Image (cartoon, rainbow, N blue to C red; front, side, top):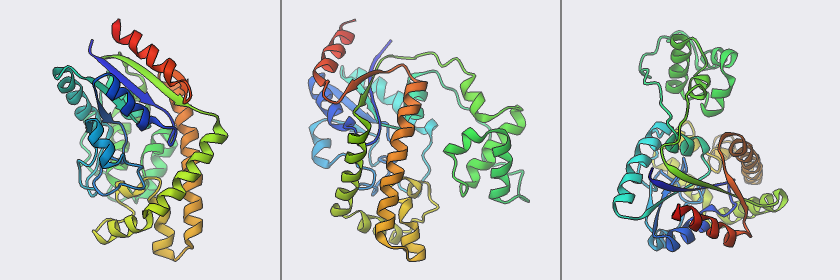
Length: 297
């Protein structure tokens, strides 16, 4: 099987810098496993790697689609698997890095997605909220991934539930999920209080770098807070500021809070969903040793 190095962990833990170091050391190319960095123009709020960092090593799936477009786990799976093959053809090591766990797991394991049409809206008489409540009765887990304003995904989920007679989340979980690659999955971690402090400082830095101006520019370019891209942490929290005149400080505080909660959910997801070898951020030397042993097998 083709080898793939995977680096995961919570937001702000330092995945990108480690991925760059690994790419330089092991002739690698980085595949971004982030759901937001794929969008053009969403730079500061997504903590996108800088242009200078992108020049240091080859990065993929960054700045590839317009922010008005939708991007799904199936899209990532298709792009990433194609890139893995292409990178190996260049005799380089594919390195997937990111915090969107389902994207990564769906790529390295044999995930198959139901192709039921999302266009068949059999629920025209129902509001989004009514469809949301119907799904909630059967499959509340899948709603963690679907915004109430995203009618297409709500309809698709309810269609699948009705036609398959089981929750959409159970359909995915019931699959065998056999590994398709020889993947070494390493997770970065650090004491929770230090991570939360880093998250708060990073949000402050984002504001200093012009996050508010970035959001203003995106809105002027025609995006709305109902677009998928703008529902990401770091962007959606500005909605009360622009639409209701809320004070800016409360929005910043909300970004910090949501980012900390997201980091906690990421830890929980990765610890229960994927076999990961965990390293403290100060154990990079040990990580390199283990990677080299894996590469020789």
